[in-house]
Amino acid sequence: MEEISKQFKGLTRRKVSFLLLLAAVLFCVALVALTRGPASVGFKGTFTALFGDSGTAHAIIWKLRLPRIIMAILTGSGLALAGTVFQAILR
Image (cartoon, rainbow, N blue to C red; front, side, top):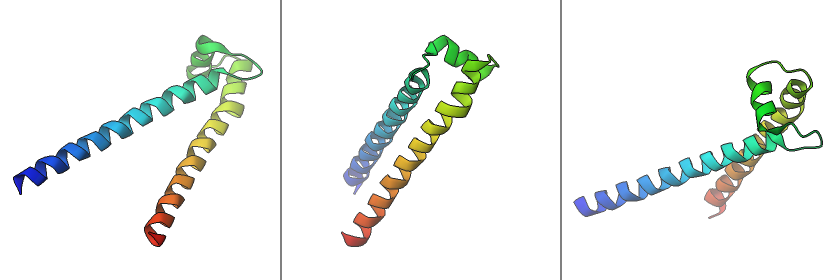
């Protein structure tokens, strides 16, 4: 019984580690997506626009790019959840 408990804890740790890795990758990709586009803002301009008011870059980041990135993340999460529910229902 103790061996099964150890295996379960090991698998749980691996799953949590994998999810944390995926969250870190998602965060990095979102940061890169904030900097790319027709109007190149760059990393320094992006951080300035995120944490302060820098005119045009601020408007581009907060009104165009950030809402699209957040909506893409929410849409992907919703589709993943719907796929999981369908697999659970239909086996």
